[in-house]
Length: 421
Image 1 (spheres, rainbow, N blue to C red):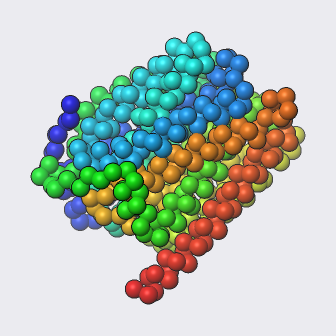
Image 2 (image 1 turned 135 degrees about the horizontal axis):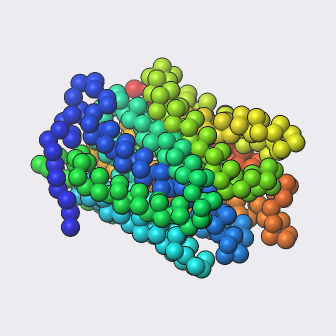
């Protein structure tokens, strides 16, 4: 069943004048926010939850990677289907499916059920490209960077409330947060069904349907798009190594549990929401997305390198808060800069496909990053210690340095192309 509701203001309002905070944009913001609250609930709990089934750090890495592998496979599909049939039905069904995945996690009594739940959630989690395409539909090119910043703000706010809920609910019972995440998905799908307008005009000409490899060839025909995709891939790889290993880092270096780790991620989410939702939209017109991508990369290189030195006797909590602020600020500047640039280089009828390709690269990075993290974290006894933490975070820093070099290269070719034109 395909929903074809097409209120006239969905596309028109998003295009009129310089108005930014239109009704469709605010509704999709709420949709993304609720979706990310459920996702944020799972992140700090997964390493602790998996240990109940005797999972090793490598198992946790594979669990995280399996989710992202499914995102990699399905993100371009959801993006292309949303171009053809509309954003609204794709978002509706994928959010419902994610709720089923959370229920499987909550009722799991064996590790294979945890895997199955994460795989299903990953398939449905490929809808992020559809949400980004919706934002592209209802914003002008001039407001595109602000729209992607708002998308990032929804991420940040989701990571405020999600880990906070995990911290509050997990002491009651570690299964409860997963049930709450499933309930939020059902609520989100219900709200989306009744209040989210379709962003693609019903009488518009649907984009030509092309195959996966033809889409790849088309998207990667632009050298600048290729460079942005490589940079985004490296950034997400480094960041996913950090997020996968962060709970182990807090356990070893500070002796923290799931609730305390959840509050730290809440702090990271609070910073990310402020930067992407308020600061980024003001910085982008002044400095340009190219410079912001470089600045964010520099912050991530430095913070990933420095944080392993911090523990409860060296620097303590104050230094830790400063160090992980570098994670939040760096990612919150660099990531929306890249998605905004990718969107601006795509045609109006190709937003879903192009952003789907970008999210597919990010999903592939989230396959490789957690697997690499799982291999780096464990010692000869399948345990995490201080030396394995150092090599894990320093590997992430080195990958982020490669992303920095790529960002500088993009700036050079972008400037050269503009000069020649």
